[in-house]
Structures are given as C-alpha cells and as structure tokens.
Amino acid sequence: MSNAQLRRFKTISEFHKFRGLPKPEHPLISVINLETIDHLSANEWSLVNDFYSISLKRNFNVKIKYGQQEFDFDEGVMFFMAPGQILRLEVDRDMQLEQSGWMLLVHPDLLWNTHLATTIKQYEYFDYSVHEALFLSDKEEAIISGIMQGIQQEYHANIDKFSQDLIIAQLEVLLKYSERFYQRQFITRKISNHKIVERLERIINDYFNSSDLTQKGLPTVHYIAEMLNISPNYLSNMLRLLTGQTTQQHIHDKLIEKAKEKLSVTDLSVSEIAYELGFEHPQSFSKLFKTKTNFSPLEFRQSFN
Image: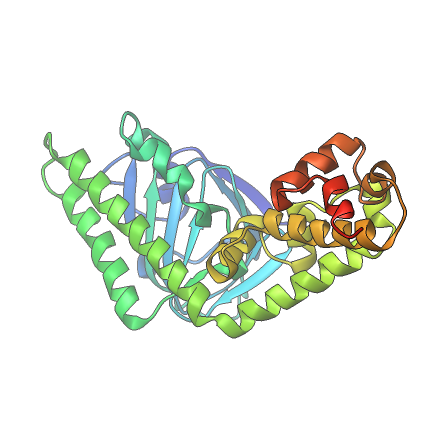
C-alpha cells in the first residue's frame, strides 16, 4: 500500500494556497505558470480536485501515476482531469524541478447556466489515462498556450457583463483544439495504434476460443481495455477513427463470425449455440444476429441447405 498523502482540493483557492501561489484573481478559474509553483513538500502525494484541470507541461521531472500506469512528462504534452479523479505524483528530491508550461483550473460553478456545463462532459479525453496524454507539436503548443494566456488576460481585466461569455468562449475553443489534436494523434501514431488493434484481435479471438465465453458471457469493453492496458474511452475513440467501429461493435462482429461458423458447420440448435456463445436467453442472441445480418439464425442456416 502506498504511503502517499492524499489531499482533496474543493476550491481553486485551496490548491493555490497548498502550492505556494498567490490568492487566485478569480475564484472559479485560474491559469497558472508552472514555473511559479513551489517544490512539493513530500516524496509522494495524491490529489483529488473538485474542479477541472487542463495541463500543458514540459520538462516536468515528476513521475505521475493514474491508476497503475506511469508517465514521465519530458516533452510538451497535455493532460486532462475531471473533478473527482485521483492522481498520484512521485518526486525525486535529489532532482531539481525544471517544469514549465501552463495549468488551467476551471471550477464547475463557472459553467453553471451555460451550454458548456453539459457539453464539457462530452469531451472523453477527460477520462483518458496519463499514458494516453496528448503530445503536441511546437505549433500546437503555441496555439494552446495562446488560448490559456488569453483566458488569463480576460479575468485579469476589469470583470464586466461580457467577461464570463468571453472566458467560456475561449475555453470552448481550447477544448475543440484539444479534440482536433487528439484526432491528429490517432492518425500520426498509426504504427502503435495498429499494434493495439492487432492485440485487440488476438485478445478477442483467444477469449472466444476459450471456455470464458460460455462461463462468463461476452467480454466487456472494460475487460478488453484492461487487457490492452489502456482506458475504455481511448480505445473506442481510437478504433472509431481507425476502423469506423467502437470496441463493442468489434466484439459483436467477432461474435457473429463465430455464430455463422457454428450455424453452418454444426448441427447444434439455435438455443445450444446461443448458450455456447454466452447468452442466457436465446432470444437475445437471435435479435442481435438479425440486427447484424438481416437474417434470423434459422434463415441463415437454411441458406446453406
């Protein structure tokens, strides 16, 4: 069990105080220059924020863990955290902290009564793991830095009736650019991503050829993602871009292939096949098969006779 200290920050002001920063100029949003953050006081600590955190980090020689995964920020990357997520940091006290970059903190109350209060939850990269961080080119990094500084300048100015709308608009632009850059990353990292797809196929094939299918039913997306050591959202988003299908659709396609094989080369009844494929109710199997093939299992079998 880790001895890391767990700290929960309910407000942005609490986070500022803990990290040795001046009181935030705005209670619900803050842009922090990472070069101004003090060294951590413990070798290990964990944090939970009750607000969104969007970090653009470079030369961040602190080991970060999210779940069981580790990642070293040694080049320009972005990482996103939603309220309630736990992040663990490990610090080498013998190393000088040379971090640079920006951190944007956004309390959900800032979004209250705006459309972004709902749409921010649609950006699935907030649920990605640390090792699925967004790697930025110099040009992309300049764009993100510019937006963050624009937000900072807006709340530095005298607050008026336009301030919140302008901050929300800039925040939305930042989120859209981040989504675009993630889509680019899925494409430019094709070799590593195609290796993930190959491993996905092996995992599903091994599962379908074992007794797990009968005993445990269809593998879940979470099970597949855990076997691949990546988060479910990252896996589905990557697959959707590379293949046009989600993880669930891949699983179902493999199931239909197996079902077609059994219907065409065995004398097993539809109920027996449904049971062997992990279905408790044959009707559920028949419905899925019909949806995927436009044939009922019996109609498909009869097409071979």
